[in-house]
Amino acid sequence: MTLEEKAVSNFNDTFVRPAKFYLSGFSNVPHIKYYYVFLCFSYIITVLGNTFLLSIIYLVKTLHTPKYLIVVNLAFTDLCGSTALIPKLLDTLVFDRRYMAYEACLSQMFFILFFVCIQSWTLVTMAYDRFIAICFPLRYHSIVTKPVIASMLLFLWAFFFLLLVFIVRSIDRLSFCRSLVVNSIYCDHAPVFLLACNDISFNYIMAYVAFVLVLCIPLIIIALTYVCISVALSRIVTREERLKASKTCTSHLILVAIFFLPIMGTNIASVTSYIHPNARIINSSMTHVIPALLNPIIYSLKTEEVIISIKKICKRSRINNTTKW
Image 1 (cartoon, helix red, strand yellow):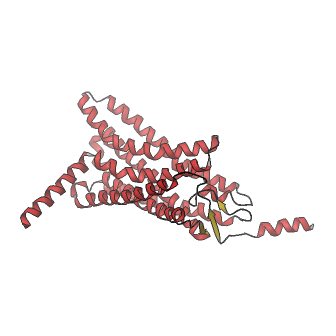
Image 2 (cartoon, rainbow, N blue to C red):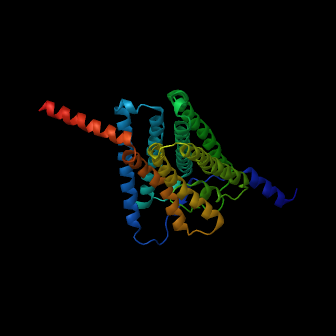
Image 3 (cartoon, rainbow, N blue to C red):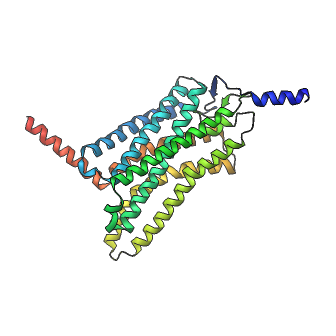
């Protein structure tokens, strides 16, 4: 074996694990402080909105149904996903703490990706609920039960926990012997593994597997369920009944559009054409921030059951206050 071959062999056997990564953030963006204010405002509204929605569902026993068990899962996931991203994001950008420890970077990557996966498949579970409710209304209460929905949601949490552990642990097999500058404002998967100087083909494969599992398959399933729902609605004779049935789907369709359109647009654009780093960073962060911000607002304002429940609680509190006086 020549000296050059020995050197290559020794390099392949040695994994260079950096102590820290440097998050590059934005470059030459005017008035970027307004974006920081928006992030802070968004996080406050997200926490208040999702906590409020969770409290309403907890307090009103009529909302203790399989459908609202899915809503609870989505609200809790939005809350956790925003907490995993925004506080650290603000700390990095506002206080210019761009260095992040290797272990902290992988932890952030895991939690952000994990909660995105749960959000995506929770929307699929919602589509399943609407599909059974409209296509098989007489069998709805026997098919969609609390144990069934709880089992589905627990399976999602367990499956994606194991998948994300595997994906993030695959970063550990990489050597980072060149640049340690992550071209993002948080530890995103692709910007991190692209810094490696050894073979990253396996990481590419896992990135595509995650893309298909988290975005493509859920969208296909949701589209198929709504094709079936449209066929079922077309068979309903009266226009009033058709509108009443379709009204129950509007909130879910808005949530699907808010979640999938930005993230799909960003991923497709990054593969097919050039995106300026600043635009990619803003789009990427918005795909995590906006759905969690708007989901509780949509479910509070667009769902009749929740509005009625809020009115009941307000009425009950007014009665209690008057009796005290």
